Image (tube, rainbow, N blue to C red):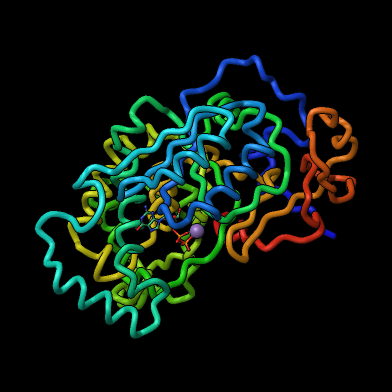
Amino acid sequence: YTVHQPVDDDLDVPFYTSCQEPKVDAPREKAAMVMLVRNKELYPALKTVQSIERHFNQWFHYPIVFLNDEPWSEDFISVMNATVSGEARFEILPKGEWGFPEGMDVESARDSMAAQGRSGVMYGGMETYHHMCRFYSGKFYTLDALKDYKWYWRIEPDVDYYCSLTYDPFAEMAKHGKVYGYTIALSEEPRTCPSLFREMADWKEDHGIETTELWNAMIAPSWVPWPFRSLMSWFSHRDAQGDGWNLCHYWSNFEIASLDFFRGRAYQDMYEHLDKTGRFYSERWGDAAIHALALAMLLPPEKVHHFEDVGYRHDWYYQCPANAPGGQLLESATLGDDRTFDQERPGGIGCRCECDGSRTRNYPSYCH
Ligand code: GDP
Ligand code: MN
């Protein structure tokens, strides 16, 4: 088996590499877990909430904010209220925070989405999916419902958290000066966003933003010599210099991140620039790629944290850390259930992971 090691040990290491006694009396950060969800997803959402309570929130009791573009069903509210160990809030998105942007030609947007659907662009034909990606790219961060928080942990229906998280990730992010934390990185589906990289690179150059190490790491080395390289710049996924994006992105269904960064002027200005193009609809730009490219252009690499000690699954990608020796004994009296853990392995960093720590389906090397 292999245990994934961070590429550069000095820039980013796990906050802890074994189980901790949860600091139940430590002060909490201004933070919340947030889930955008539909009423009909009650049971997949419940599965997620039960999992995160069992593996983390039973010790920390952070609030969970549920967001919906429609009124909540009574069922959803009562089931979740009976499940959370902290506060549950049920928010309805105000008009204007969801749906087509003002002034958009909705008919031609719909034609374009239908064409994307016919040509097999992933989720390209699904109008609500475009709304969701646009929402999580911009308006999410400036919601009134989140204004009292500095940090968010994005959660989604039907995911698994495999390991115990026995420390407060918000507190550790703050303490280590981190802005963004992820679990899974992978390659973006190129047909969803033919002009996204060019658009973001143009914005970056217009604003005189220097390239960062993180940005450079996401530029696939080009074997084409000058001056021919600039001729390539009108191809997809290239900037005006002909440099290409390697399609790295952090999967945004799991994020632990600073709201202040995304609420800040630079990010919001960039989002407005992207939104004005209309291509959240005429293409199917994903919020994950936008977050990753924005982080790469605006932050030094040490601000991004890979939670490689967190066991996580969404769809058919997963990260499964190997268990650290000795950790399973800690807190065993308070678990109160019959979980069976994977074996402990030398060099493991997980805490009571239930998944097979010899395997993972995750590609963080795309991004570093
Ligand atoms: P995927 O993970 O990319 O396959 O996308 P999902 O279908 O899981 O959607 C991402 C998140 O947005 C999930 O939490 C969904 O519940 C939520 N979501 C997607 N579309 C809508 C919508 O139209 N309304 C609401 N309220 N939530 C949505
Ligand atoms: Mn999902």
